Figure 1 (cartoon, rainbow, N blue to C red):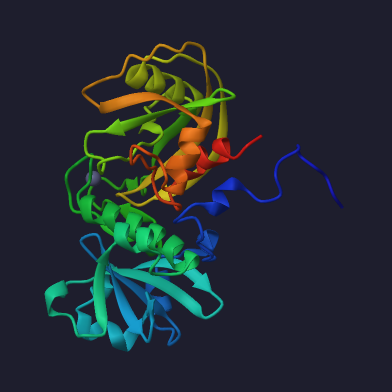
Figure 2 (cartoon, rainbow, N blue to C red):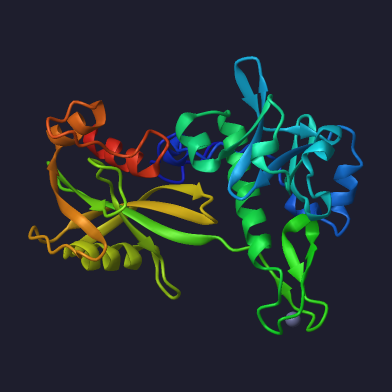
Length: 313
Ligand SMILES: [Zn+2]
């Protein structure tokens, strides 16, 4: 049977961004209250270990492995009581756990590397990077939601880490995903890029901002583009999304059609914001821009928005 919903590309654009390669079977409908205990009792269980924004990596010859067997976890002071079950792959259960061992005290073969460097330097394969996005986001949420937001009582982890229960007022708290709109305003021959104040010298990127409660994605894209650049948008089109574990966002990438040309940049947010020609963008992507301007790296959704437009007919 074949039914074409609409004329969409065969490969989703989201498949090409960093942190999107997660292949874990979450089996979310089977998560019971004892799912972590059961998974830890499985000799095939493997854990991803995280401490304060860093993932522990085992060096094996010229590559890194992000998964540790149970007997490898104990010397690293993994807190198995706070482990969460990410799901299963063909080898068995995969969990994530916070780790206490000071990165300075690690054995020679183990490194604790920050998530951003792992992603930019491509230190682990796309499936493990996707699993890191899942584990890091969940562990961050648990670390900052230990107390009930309604009554202040200590909460307890449930459902393999996908819920926290308050025993005092009996309500359930669920993990957060914070949506962020990231958007590229484009015409046939120009696109709008800005420079945040904290960017590396020379880097320009797509504009971005949090989607607020009660807003559609499209409304947030229009609002942020107008607030940051003074550009009003007509049509807005969704392109791709990217899990972004800093700490638990989902980047939602869109294109927008500008209705005016004159930019009025919000100088509190942006150091600069201007139109770039296609040729200038292609040079920035190739690293040959005469002004040394460049765009975010290949795994970033901003790179894919910019590249998709620059390389389109
Ligand atoms: Zn409570």
